[in-house]
Length: 239
Image 1 (cartoon, rainbow, N blue to C red):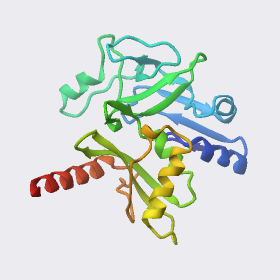
Image 2: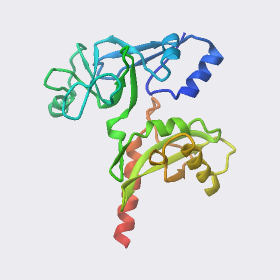
Image 3: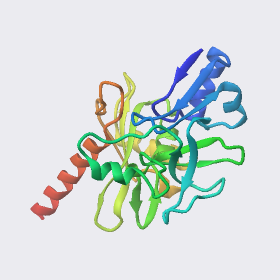
Image 4: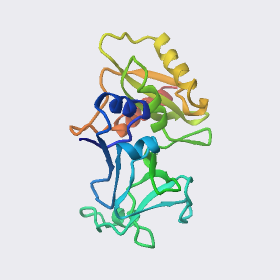
């Protein structure tokens, strides 16, 4: 078997892995806090492409903005009940924020359940971009851009914009031998718009030689966001 986790895998990439390796992929979703776990074998994934599986530890609940539990098909915060209790080291306030009045816990992921109880992840709430009053979850956009043959790695973030509040920006690491250019940036924008609504697609594409990641591979989007916010503040000061 081959086990993968840590982030939702784009559907075309996972299907390519199955075509190459056979139906031996096992995917799980969990977190350092171990509030719950879902598991998905290849057969289940092929039945419900994009799912991260059904709960094998704890019970999954999708919760709306007003704290109400949402029915199948609606997106909200992913909570688990019945899992192990946890606390953040010397941070009782953050610990309290992770639990609701029913004792269910969340780490801030957004997702939905289907009618058969399979979980689909959308993104982290902290990654949400608010552009022109519209909520944009960048994971879907990243999944599309990752399938472009020129792209090795990508982060889609919200960066300050005077009119929109935030604009959708893609920061792209190209594959070896691919030259960055304004023409390629436009090509990536059009590539995205062929598959997603315009509001979800980047207005701007920047190129970097390498994206900031932790040793375990986790993308450090906050470093990129901080970099652009600092740059925006400097430009406004000069004006």
